[in-house]
Image (cartoon, rainbow, N blue to C red):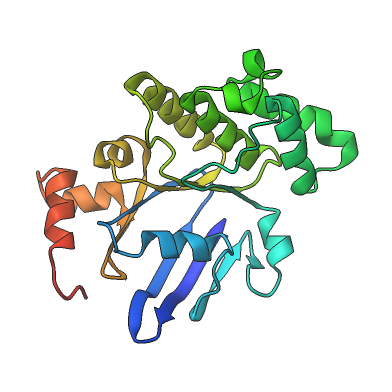
Length: 243
């Protein structure tokens, strides 16, 4: 059973089509790259997949739980890092993660272990007692990922997790995502094609609200012979009327 499934997912604003007829299946251990130019529908798609925006049509299931019919139950299996991490600057790193764990309904008996594991997994042990507001951008991104995994969800959705980072910080975050991808199902929205190529086993490329490619990285590259991902992306997203 897919960890994340979407069927006929659409969102309309009056006559404007933000997303139409989107289908996807994401299994455990897969990393899906969500790609597309600005205005392609990526943000709308992520908002629907995380339950922050109701679709006009279609359904989303997380670990078999319908996100619309049972949002609380479905979101217990979901971790989300928005483009701007939801951080509280006046808390310490540990305090913030305890808060996130409680919000994710981690049992009291498991709070200490959950926070310790998130700190360890994201390389935050040495800054656990520091104020969030005093952290570097790279550590704040690590903390954003830590709050998304503190309740050990099956599905993790990351929106531009390396935006605004320096090259060393980008490398560290990519390594962390690669490690998480071995045990979780991950949706990664990014404008950096090299990042998608390095981390993703699956791709969903959007253009004008519709999918112009959905499948494995291997299948995309084999279909397009020796073209680079950048060349393929430009070719697909320059179509005026995608099928």
